[in-house]
Amino acid sequence: MLGASLALGATITLFQATFDSSNVRLEWEVTNEAGVDRYEIWRKANNEPSFTRLNTQPPTGQHRYQFLDTNVYRGAAGTTSGGPFTYRLSVHTSAGEQNYTTVLNATPSAVQRSWGSIKSMFR
Image: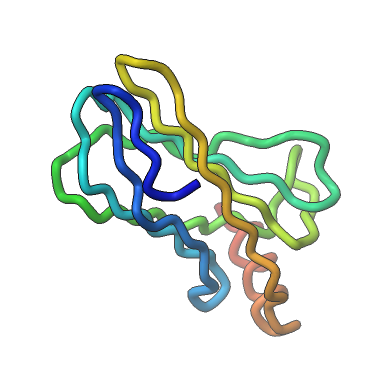
């Protein structure tokens, strides 16, 4: 439902997730931020029962935002998550909450998965 707008809310024109080495880059574009309090990024792996909040971002007026998910291979309590991954962008406004989702169906290579797991052990 891209392009939807709340009264005194955001107009989101893009929300996408792409692999960036062993990480996932989330990008979203906003044409209107009237009344926006914050953006929240959530992730859910195929084998997880619910979403986990990854980040909260206040509006800055820059119209294009991004977030790098550097823990994509670390699930709840340090377990390894399996894809596909569903990401949710929650836009909190003075008029309520609007949610957008995107699914990262592509599977990273074995090298990307291994490197992501190794990096997460040292965080």
